[in-house]
Length: 298
Ligand SMILES: Nc1nc2c(ncn2[C@@H]2O[C@H](COP(=O)(O)OP(=O)(O)OP(=O)(O)O)[C@@H](O)[C@H]2O)c(=O)[nH]1
Ligand SMILES: [Zn+2]
Image (tube, rainbow, N blue to C red):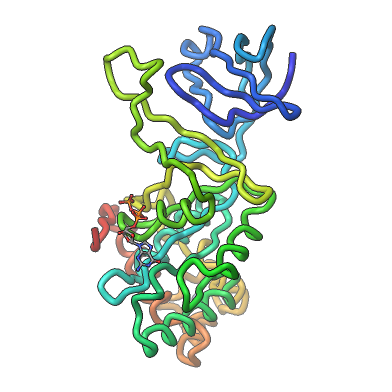
């Protein structure tokens, strides 16, 4: 029995990386009975006779689990945010950040398409980047898109992590992945020619080693339509509110109507971003009314 990590899943085969080797395996039938679908990123126990023939025996406990892309144990997400006036939205950015906080996944923000900005807009984005850094989120922004420095900065963040790239349609996720890994043939929705039995297309998901980290080659979607939390918990997922909230007069203050609220006074002093607070209010109301949050910009 060996232990390894699923690095690729395709048509019922699982490629498991263990001790410098990749083993192709199939899952034993009992997985289906137990309703466990092995996921790329899973740490697993397996048996193998050759590199081509083996059985996946057991999926070990997961740290995290994403649905889109279906990857386990992701602990970092690169949030690709297009910065052009037409596309940029702090609402979308904050929504993704909250979803990641809820999932327990670290976020790195990448500001894309900076080459399309005029100087004034670029300066605004840079200022905003600084504010997000103060909250604790690394932000990668460079006047030159895909500069050596910005790619190196992303690679540094990826080191030691299992990561996904997320962001709106057209934000620049695939383009970024291709710059991080030149020659990468993004395989989203690819039909497996050797293995497809003609019933339906097979989605391949794999984790590719980039700069001492692993990145899912399938970008994720940002459409976390609803936060699976109660409205009064939302404050826990705004890191700057967590810290400030310790000085609110009322325990369990949600920073809306309570007097002597440290978050609201920091907002009045300009120490909390107005856009973050506005988005907080909007998410709060949405969760409270149990409405679905739809993406405004598609
Ligand atoms: N000028 C400029 N264009 C970019 C940049 N990044 C991406 N683009 C362009 O934006 C368009 C969308 O980029 P993609 O990488 O396909 O976006 P995506 O996020 O993968 O989109 P989906 O696959 O639809 O989710 C493409 O035409 C890219 O060439 C950038 O930094 N600067
Ligand atoms: Zn408060």
